[in-house]
Image 1 (cartoon, helix red, strand yellow):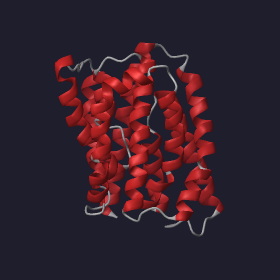
Image 2: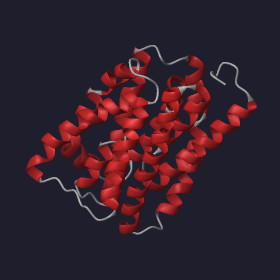
Image 3: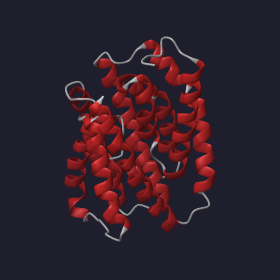
Image 4: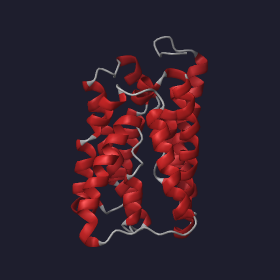
Length: 256
């Protein structure tokens, strides 16, 4: 199955399952919907169509995540240089996507995720001094934008940067929502600009909002029962697992 113009019941069933699961992970740890949704749907519809499929679920879920929590104004004041840099470079990443072999970006992203998560899980702690917060944020924002345009995943190194700021759990969740929301808007504009957004895929993306939200609500219920320490370890374990998932996916796509 290489397209959505002739949608089969099997493809619809697979897409619903994928986005329920991706939404569940998103609700549990605050990220992962684009990475999981894109990675799994790429197998069935190809990377370009899969990138369009994630747009509406990611946009609406991230509007919710970005606007709830009560920290919107202080987070925007603190993070705007990082967020602006991430948005500014996303179209460059989408352009690079059109020039490189399928799978190369997934492989790179997976390696970066594993390289970050493993030392963190064994006790290494990364913190950024206040005087370096803006320059480091701008640099990592630029890298995050490129990788977002390349892969449709907004996680690396943006989530790592936000983790290093020592934000409380609710602040951290809302900050990720802001990054993901702005990146989703920029990704949609970039895909449209490069002629990669078809009407069929956009409608299918809208239909996948409901299973995504169902998964998010289920994940959030479990998250509320988890302690702050367990939550941070869950974040790192999720990054590691996503990385271990993306590495073989990238290798498989490179070979096909």
